[in-house]
Length: 149
Image (cartoon, rainbow, N blue to C red):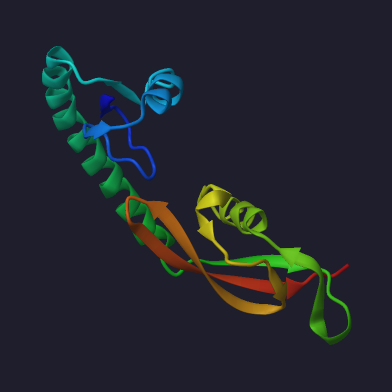
């Protein structure tokens, strides 16, 4: 089945690309979610026009992500946690905790964009990557400190 993607689809292609998929995948997943349209002559010409609009939109998104990465670069946030003997944390610091600390500092970042291979379980300074999309990423510093409680 020949389809033209209207949005980027992971492991399949980018918006405006002509792809060949199995009929069930196209009919039951891509078409109902409006991720793709049938590759007719009329749709091909319409998609060519939309490709140009999509390219402009992607450039704008890339510029926005790069600007935000510039602001976020080198940002330091503090996360307070209770710790026991040997400064071992009760629990851990997750991407949600870091996301909340960034939002409190005035940088609204979705916690799913924070790249933390495993939760932080020790006090101290930790460097954490933030992937803002469109190939743009930056690094922030997270201080895990002992809470006063």
